[in-house]
Structure formats: structure tokens, C-alpha cells
Length: 102
Image (cartoon, rainbow, N blue to C red; front, side, top):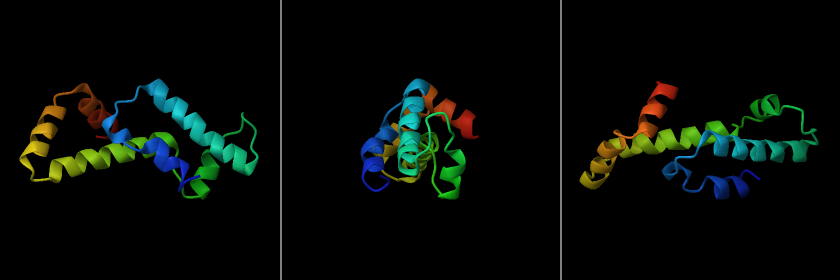
């Protein structure tokens, strides 16, 4: 699932500004993968299982990819990308990322 499905649902997610609801729904779907594989019930948490497997939940995967994308955008010396990054800094999405992860 990690090598086939995860790349499909995360492809291009760096460019999307998903709402909290959308992130939560994708997180539930990703947790259901673990529930199905390890035969957990829907009311059982899979956080410890993900931790012991060395995996992240979808929320953390999404924000990690987004932060990595923004960091790489900032470090490029391409004038077009620098202009895009400068414009991105004016959006609320950038402010929320900074506030969320300092």
C-alpha cells in the first residue's frame, strides 16, 4: 500500500491547499489501510501501530511534503521560482504553515 497507493494519493498534494476536513478524510482513509491489513476494528486507533511500523499518518505526510516543497522552492536560485515563492509568502496558507510548524 505504501509503495503503490500512497504515491497516488499524495501526487501533487504540495500544490494543493486542502481544507482541514479534506486532510482529515484522507487521514481516515489512510488509517483504514492499516485497520484492514492488521484486522483492527474501526473504533480502534492505529497511531501506535503506525509508530511501531515507522510510518506517519496522512496529516504528517501531507505537511512534511508541503514543507519540503516550500523549503526547496526557497533554496532554488531560479528567478521564476523565487518570484513564485515571494508571492506564496503573501498567502494565508504560508502564514498557517509557519504558525503550525514555527
